[in-house]
Length: 155
Image 1 (tube, one colour):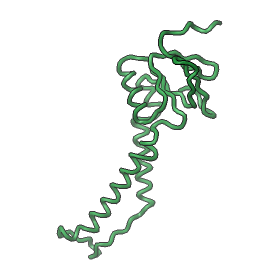
Image 2 (cartoon, rainbow, N blue to C red; image 1 turned 60 degrees about the vertical axis):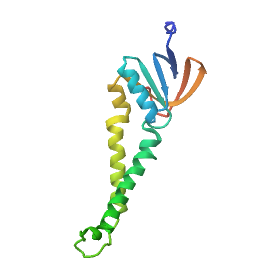
Image 3 (cartoon, rainbow, N blue to C red; image 1 turned 135 degrees about the vertical axis):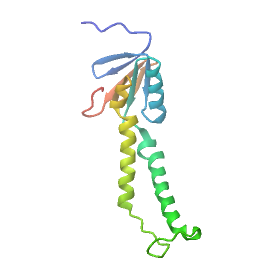
């Protein structure tokens, strides 16, 4: 059968499929996720394309990990300087042991929790956003071609 006629909206070509949508978002970092969620809330059909993993630099490398590390550093600093407030660790000193394994586990757990609650393709699907994992290339001003990630399909 012949493909459906193009809609006035945007379209993405995924493998041999053509997907028509009202809103096409390239990049599933914090801005792309927010834009896609707003589009869906306004009743638009939304396709979100991401070449790596949803969540972007903020979730995986920047904002979230740095804030988790800063929180641990502040906790260590609070223990080290607690004596000036009359609070002294039981061992009697101001020394504190920093367990990087525990810090890393907390950091990973925090990132994973944010991903599972807010950023995953499954969460986006529940909101009505179709997520496609692959590299995007504009064919023209209203058409995007997506080379799918190995083993990824359009979610």
